[in-house]
Image (cartoon, rainbow, N blue to C red; front, side, top):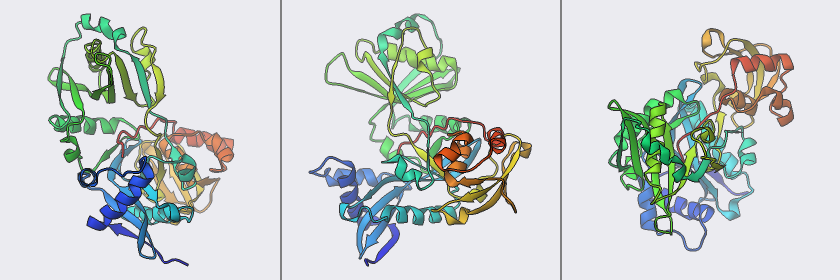
Length: 394
């Protein structure tokens, strides 16, 4: 039997293992990316930690773990993120990723991070480890010329354009103020200022009365001059004026970048924004997933009234196994140990309730739990359906 260990890796050891495995797993090869530039990008990721699996002393699997905070039903929790989870081909199908994830989950639970989110390479793989899928963010594709009437509307306010690096402080201020209002929204604990200083995107700030009412982060790309595509990976607004100032800006590019792609949270309905937009909606990026890492530490989120008890089972985080009471009295969740359970809940079922992604009537079908119709009704009252939006890409 091989000797298998898991530990944190840093410095040159981390770079050697990460370069070899990440490049093979996530890029068309050969060749690998130029290493010096790749290392500069990796080292610019402030705060990210790396953990690896070693088989007989050789690094065969690795994950990058950026620390984040996440709004879960109105409470900001420390959150564990996972990125670039990859394994050498000879080490695959041996359970090493599950072992790596279990090791990291215990570490992050001890560190006080009761929730976790990631972007999966395969949903079913992480589903078996307790993660549930968030609603899919979408790209809205449309022609900018349908917005030309906005140029005559006299919207007031003003737009300020700069490179993302030059406006990074304003960007951070805005998304930090946005996080408490958006369920599921996660932000890096350590601002990624070095990456922003590469200035690979434009930042547009829509202002009214001296306040930032919306922002858009975008690039202009394409092969046909005067028919480029404007792609905005961030399109956020506080007010109607802010939204339409951003849309008016798109109209100003009709003769330069007449094709528009907006990345939008699942809760946005761009087909209602303006007549004749008729956006084509396509998936944007991979749908993220989330799970509860520590049942005892999720109290304090905003919930509805009611109480139920459940026997929670969690094969990958065994400290969660046990019977709990979930009480919404006073509008804030209280979690306590209980003597008896009125149903069983797999950690997927509890995670689905917390994030609001699935109705409890689905749990018996999905193998996530056994709530009766009466208990399911209480669950819906305590944990109303929500549409989580993760925000950060990692």
